[in-house]
Image (cartoon, rainbow, N blue to C red):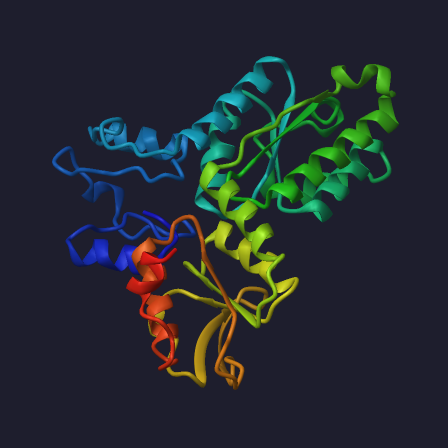
Length: 325
């Protein structure tokens, strides 16, 4: 349902099954899904193809559709761009459920292409400017463009939308860069004919978390601990922000904190688990930044906090701190 291992395990323990895994690998064959089943569409939304498959199986898809309104806002923006004959450039991770869903919905109305980061956006810019052969474009973006995409035609008018959990500053940098490419090629006086101004498509929870993290970066602390699912896009961006200033440990629950000396955490860049020793400074007063991804329950963060506080016998009781806050 969400990118949080603890939450999903809790749901499974209550009898909920998953039709697919995070990467879209089928876990339950479609022929086993019937009208007797309740199928919940998650906040990421789902593809048009999957919706049609469920409808073919006589499954009610609207009653239990929990697609986030901000995701639907992106779909509506993409549809509007398509109706105005703009190509939709989607800033997102190609294999992420939300990006797959957004791409599917966008492709119903507009030529669409996915760029993962500013580097891919710059490659796209080279094709727009004609600095690279079109034949290379089809090889490079083969799995990231909609059917029938014509680079000679569809890269003349573009608008940018995003996976709602991407880093806001990166989406803005991509939009600014592509805007500059269009000015360079067509002139600023013709910009409106070639670049659509699209903003405000980030999830509010993601936006709030990112803004709060920027404030935390102003703090003088010894380390940062970020709690969330290891496959959570918005959590990984918070990790990247914290790493700019602090030794940062990405964990999915309090269970990863083995002792005052040992912590098990995730190296997001290498996509592997690590064990670190001596992560807490050897002093009585330690300043720790503790934050989490948008999909992480508050109770999980509380457990992490209590686990850390428990290592310090002289620490004030949480109830006393809250009372005097």
